[in-house]
Length: 431
Image (cartoon, rainbow, N blue to C red; front, side, top):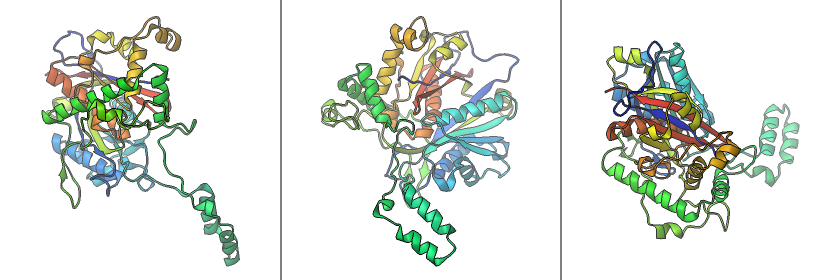
């Protein structure tokens, strides 16, 4: 299977065409921030998801000086939920000082959870229900819920309902060692029980993506991310103070290696012949992101300088068709890198007329983006991938790249578990 997600932006420097329309309520991205993305089990290890989400929300408020009471709604994405804070949007919002009168809800859509949060925000603003919405995402892989076995859970619930000592002793007498085996979490599909790494390995094999190709792509991601980090281009990051520890100010998973070192790693999922390894996969990451989305009229009235127009849709062909653009019009591409093999397989599919005709019902291929425009500041393989937080990073990074590179349009894409993808048009506002 091939699944992608897309988004788009512009800056009025190369084309006279604009995606903003007179007489309609234009929706704009005012600002986007994120906490540093850290490998799970490192500096954030003793925190909780709502701590990181709160940090992103506070960072957004500090950077924009936006009044908390002017935020009409908050939407957050998350994937592996902490049961104590199931509506993490609400808990983080209250912790960040937002009024308890500001509604907040949480969405989950695997790796495109914050993309969906942004789409929801766009809909609320475009429909006139809200003037300003904060959207974001958070993932905390350092401490994921581990459950008792179902047999153990049933017995414990029965014990809670038992009214006599005899009934309780009878239940305890039925306890077996097998009841004590916990249910460990896994990044897998409920419907197929297949891990995403297995799917990526099969996808790479189906499209003939070699281990060498994947390692080279992963190395490219780390090298470009390190360059962007050293040059101070990752300006969406806001400092995060970990209680009892130092202030965290940068991602810690960017580690350029060598092809020789990468080639020594064994397959991580399909053994011994698989091609997906720890080196060409995104790693388990802790992090949070947040963006401020407003109506253009309200943003300008409050003195803000929006970065981009937003208009959500699904899938690359629809993005281009609805906007009246072609692949050649795009100046900056930002695709989510779950696995190097997944990205390369998608690019191969985009270049295939056969795939377009037989799998997409189209007459001709969409075409693949040129690598000189593709993920030039690194991607999820190097920067990290807190499942629900990546979408906001992609959108903000495209906006910043277009400003830095003087481009007009950008295209963002992300795949998600369950065979899903998300698409959104983003057009940078005039300077």
